[in-house]
Image 1: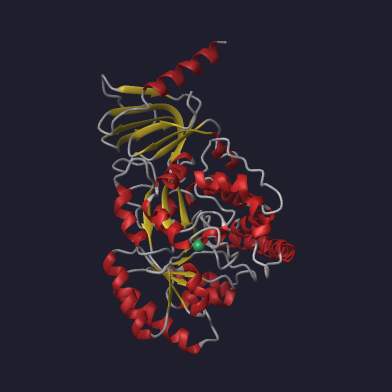
Image 2: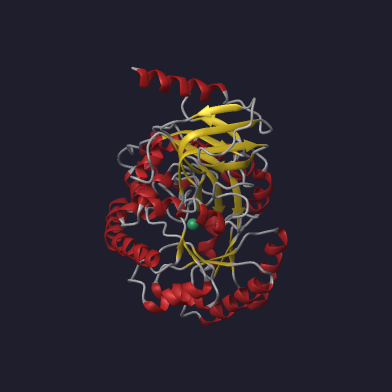
Length: 466
Ligand SMILES: [Zn+2]
């Protein structure tokens, strides 16, 4: 009874401060704090002022007088999560991926992209409600680069890093599916000169990374252009980020100086050469294990509505609509699209690649290569925000300890975004970006679903309206 009363009291304290201004001083007291660097602080105290952590430590920290104190005894605090691989130009359904299922008769692609460009708030909300306070858009239209600045001072948005358009050697007619009548998110890498100019342009605009989509090892002219892109990326003090899912492609990407591999190696077990190259480049490895299964779920949802756990009401409006209406498109699928065959292919792909990806994650982690949590959100079936839980959970199934996944989902994501000086860990001088959890995430990573409050730059908000 007494415990219950105390719990209620805590809730009242928290509710009373949900409209705080970023300039207020707030003290969070008595929680178990995971600081994102691997340290645990029991009965921890965090003092926040002006959106920044001004003090953090155990019970010996001096609490100033006449400030708002929030007692969160029994709760757990971690830095805000970071998803290191997302796409703001994709929705979680096929409307944004006509190259996979062409539904352009029902969804105007230009209109959709215009909407995604001009109305980002529903995805921002989805991220914050999921506890995600940093996202790395590794492939989109040029506007994704300007979004970095736009989102920075918006307390209702995650911090954004973005690479801008993807460079690819894939046949241009296939790339056109991704592009609108007046803008490209997929750019054909046509020559070394063109590659160099593009790298210069994106770097000047402030792109965080230069993204390559596919490494065509047998296409010698593409590989020559890719070498030029790699060289210019280095000259511009930018970094090469590469989609390369086979071991051979991934190794070649590393030889070219890649700093981020945006997916797992999924065809073979990584070998010693891969590990040495990755360590030498000091890369960040993004597993994105669940995105393939997301496609499978999205295909299946044409036949039967997908049952989806959204306990924290974090899904964006568009995702909710697709979950409700996906079966309406069954009779609208293109004539040459064989749904049963695609489902069967995807099932086999998951069965074949998931065990390799899980094994490689463990091997990569144990060899000391830095790993960051990443979902590839926006791809069909992988929704913005909430998908981070599934990804962390499969990483745990792969044998990664929850305490290490916490670091991968916070500090390492900030390193990927090149923002480690600002957030990703709970330290004096950093943004007060944190989440409060009911259950201990270091015991079981599924406990990240027990999120009760999020704080972005010192502004605290409840997930549930108590
Ligand atoms: Zn992606």
